[in-house]
Amino acid sequence: MATPASSAPTPSPLTGPVVVPTACYLGVAVPARLADEGARVALVLLALAREHSASLGGLLVAALMVPHVVAAPVAGALADRVRHRRLFHGLGLAAYGTGLAATAWALGRLPTALVLLLVLGAGCCAPLVTGGLTSLLAELLPERALTRAFSIDSTTYNLAGILGPALAAMLAATIGPGAALFVLGAAALAGASAVALLRLPARPPTKHGRRALRPAVLVAGAREIVSNPPLRSVTWASSVGQIGIGALPVVTALLATERHADWAAGGLMTAFAAGAMAGSLTYAVKPWTRTRPERVVLLCLPLTALPLALAACVSGTTLTTALFAMAGWATGPLFSALLTARERYAPQPLRTQIFTLGAGLKSTAAAAGAAGIGALGGLGAAPLLCMAATAQIVAAALGVAQLTHSPRSAGRAGGGSGGGVRDAQDLLPDSSQEVSRNDSGA
Image: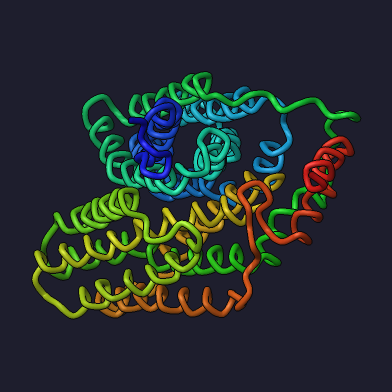
């Protein structure tokens, strides 16, 4: 007897044809993000080895990081408009990897200003390594698989955060910092090559061709973030919370010094990153919600704050390590839900721009947190850790305040409210608007 359709088992979102595109995507994301995280350490070590200048190392890292937010609107807008996305993303990752590899040779051989420009150019491609890649998941996978896919994607950031700096330091100690940076550049190039495996069909040609980028196009993503309540809430909440998270490397270094435990500087951050990976995988197995990801973001912020605040009050390093792992665990679902919220509420014509801009804001907030806490280092580790925890509470309160009682309804393709989608589609070529109108009429 045939099994009734109503009693047939529901296929798992990560089985069958979903596995192949997910595996291909990971083949791109993992090496590219390992290179991105490891390069920050390798650049400092290279500057120390060749120029004996820690300040130059800081300038190189800044040159690599600043474009994460400055170039994000341009990179995202281009990615949203190009026809051949595999070619565009592949060339972007290849340029990033080539920039790192070229810097490995150029530092100490070319004028410092030229080296900084080289790193700055690589940094302009960096938004494609973070938010740009994540935005492709909605094109590669069915909607039913996206919540878990975003959780898996968030683990690539955690994995890169754990292994990238460690890999850079290990390679620098064994084969030299220049060779280490070259290997990281080669890893990014390997990710660029794997882009060819992604099933991203070319967008159909438009009636009048692709128009040049106008200022209105470049600010469209920012306008949508400001005007779309759920997007606005998760963007500002996650960015403010990242100020505290970005300060943790400085705080852990102070803790290690105060408690005479040299291992704690790296060990506490490793525990935090490992906890974040565990949280992401937990959320991938059992998502808390599929319809209101912004609630997960706002809930996880205070859940991150509590262990951090407790860690400021205890003295044992073992207990402190466990509390850091607990705080990291809470950031796993937070980041997964943040990615889901961006995809759910972003209008399709602006999706990549919103992903890259959101990632850039988080990177900038983390850098500001590290700089701000570093300037207050004389206060001691415990007060600074309380500040990092307080940032999570402030972020949650800000996120709640930014939400309205009637958030925009969002479909996968449409994103925000009718007004937001119309604004976004006004920026598209005429034929794209005609298609959108025909779809809405159907």
